[in-house]
Image (spheres, rainbow, N blue to C red):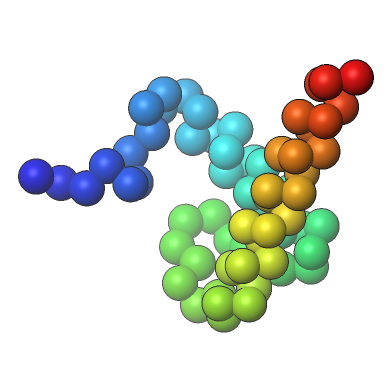
Length: 65
């Protein structure tokens, strides 16, 4: 059975998620390219993911006000 980790529940969300990821990478100075980014260091990948989480928390908190 194939892994579901790479499949979106809502396929249309893929473009929005990719845009969000590119914006977060830009904010932390990581140069992402479209497609495969396996050449990133763990530190770079982690900083992008961390920035995405920070942005999601910020958005959620603003929505609570």
